[in-house]
Image 1 (tube, rainbow, N blue to C red):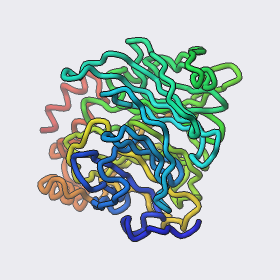
Image 2: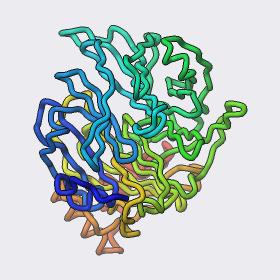
Image 3: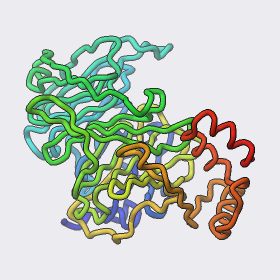
Length: 406
């Protein structure tokens, strides 16, 4: 990879490891960079990104929106050069999905945004829309969607746009969308056998090596995200096949856009999935799911100030650069089993690591003591782990638990 012309503008080691980026629009003049390895946060003033909102990244390009000028453009983070798209004339529109067919330097690159037009003043949804444009196009084509259409994720593959709706994946023909027309078919998603829908945290469609994966993340009782299932779409018959891994790839997921890369290209462990949620919780977490041993680790990061609702986290994953240290996975505060296969076969080990978050001093001290005292009695188990155990007990065992645990 050619050395970055503006490397001093970004945090150190920026072009040699994955980062999480968040722009803040008019709220702040700085851009937030989250290092998932050291779990620290840096704020940088980058003129080209000031006042902008971030929609997603592909390769070493970031897709930005300028609310004042209504301009959408790709910014090359190496040279800070721009590739402009036509402005969207519609006022007060919010997008929830960003999808792109290929790198912005390709003449056939197509961008699709999915969102809603809001009523001025009340911010109530007036119309759900899909906007489509080629990188060298002169205008965006607007395609109205049904009122009950709640798009969660989408990918472009072989001239088709796959978009997840509640219970289904709707497939659009991209050429028809560019002409302002709708040509669709529907693929039902797999039934939720093991997990109730209320426990689902997020759904992701990921394009990887010419294949489409469906990744669904779950949690129980408001706790951490600790379960997932993965399916591969057989496009010859529109059937979903449950899979237990993603091979030499690694997925980086957020709530607006997802990335699949070869693990060797970025120097991280293969057959893993990283997930960073954009939504503010009591603790903001970065998750790492390892599909080889069915474990999930999460680390807490300092809570970031809320930004404009149009802005989301996005992963920046430079490929072809110097590899990261092999042990660059997120330093976990806990490692738990994850239900990527049979539920009974998972969820058996709870390992407490001595790498602790600084978010809560009391919790840090408590967990250090547990890690150092292997004979600590079960009636003094930490409350957060107790809540996780409760979700896996029958009613009778739940009643018995209170006689031995606080």
